[in-house]
Each structure stands twice: as structure tokens, then as C-alpha cells.
Length: 319
Image (cartoon, rainbow, N blue to C red; front, side, top):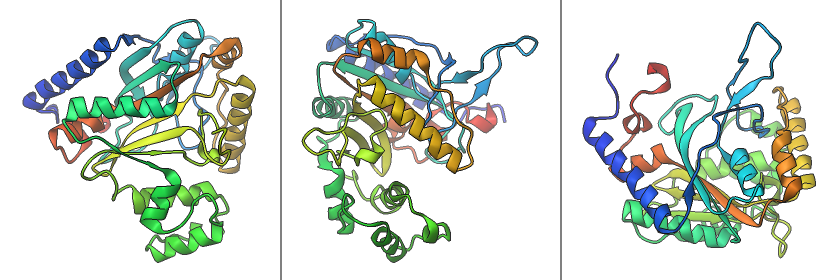
């Protein structure tokens, strides 16, 4: 079928949303930048797979990866002296398509120098109110949302307690019996039992994820059990993921290597560590916070759409 799934009327509304976003950052002095979509570096995250390509099949050449987000390249800009920046671009993830997923999608990513994750959460809230005309967000810790929704403390619960809770909530699967990774159990509980219930009336910002789920975020000095990471949910949809950015190159390298160890255990290919990104951290990344937001999902909410295909012209299987 040659016809697009994004109607002409919604295409015009999408353009208005993009204009609103650019105006929001222009008024705040945040500069738009562009970075490569193809790079020799990629993420080591065990939950994310990147598309790869060999530019020249007739001669030896490095593998290039379609970027899953512009994060590494934008942080290289910050390390080189750039200040507050944002980017609207395509990103790619080798995953199945579905109601909220398409392997090619549009992402908004921005970084603010000199602020922490709490201040950035306030700016995310301001952007959502500006674009969606919604109420101000509920802001709650990861620990408290588990206690509120599931009556369990995720920071102290054992794997056996989490498994019992999964069964009580009707989550089934033979994998549960042998699973020893607490983070996997927590993530399934969050996605299956919490995510669909939060942020219905207004956006919900969940922060202070467990330190073991820090990714590229700093660990909280006041409470080393948690990280300075947050996620944003609205209408049952995960919209954004943000960090008070880790600036320590040594610690980041340790995390990347740990990711690859997990990948080996799970039977996945290891990923090359982005040496240029590590070099940028070694040169000195300024104190900053950053967040990535899915534009196609944002448009779903803005226009009341029930499937991501209605927010883009052509889905992956019709491209």
C-alpha cells in the first residue's frame, strides 16, 4: 500500500507541534544542533539493539551504526565547549514494531549545562504544558511509586518477594522461576503493573531509579542506592528518559564493560565501546543534565491517536 498512515490534517498539526518545540527552546536560548546518524560508536545497553552497516564491502572498513539516540555525539559537543543544546532527529532501534514502537522514530534530545535532574524535570514539565496544554506533572520517586501502586519497597525487596508479587498480579512465564536478576523483575513489574496506571490525568515523572539502573546517570550522593535518573509517563505511555549526566570517564567505562558482560550471558553480541565518547568524558564533560523524548509518542497524546502509525507517514514494514 502506497498511502501514508499520517493524514494530511495530522501532518499539519504535527508541523505545528514541531514549531512549538523549536519556539520553546528559542525563547530559552537553547541552540539547535545536528550530529551524525551513522557513527562508529553505539550503545552497549543490553536492552537496546542498533542497526549496523559496512560502508564499503569491497575494502576493509569499520562497522557503522545507525544511532539509537544522538546522546554520545551531543555530549562530545558539550565536552568541546558547547552550552545548552537540543536536537530533533531520527533515531533507530532494531526492535519489533507495535502500538508504541517503530524501528525508525523521531526523537527530541536536549542538554542543559549547570543544572541537575530536578531542574530539568521542571523544564520537561513546562514543555509538556506548553505543547499539550496539560496539567503540571506529578513528581514521585521510583521507590514511592512502587509502594503506592504495589505496596512493596523496590530497594529492599528480595528477588523471591518480587517473584511472588509477579504471580499475584497474574504475570506468568516459566522464566520467572529461574530469574535471579532483580532489575529484570523490577522492570517487568513496572511495565506490567505500574506503567499503565500512572500519568492518566496529568504527566507523571518518576525519578531516583535504582543505582543498578543508572545507565549514564550519576549516583545520588545522599543515597547511593538510587541514581539521578528520571522517566516521564502520560496516558500510559513512556515519553521521556533523563539523567543528571555521569561525567566520570572511568565509571562510565566500567558500566559499558558490565553491559557487555550481561550481553554475553544473555547470548547477545558484545558492542564496541565508543572511544571518542570516552575521550570526551576524559577531557571534561561539564556538569549537565539531559533528556530524550519520543516525538511520535508525544504526537499520539497531542492528537489523541491510538497507534504510533497514525503519527508517522510510513511504518517500518511499509517504508
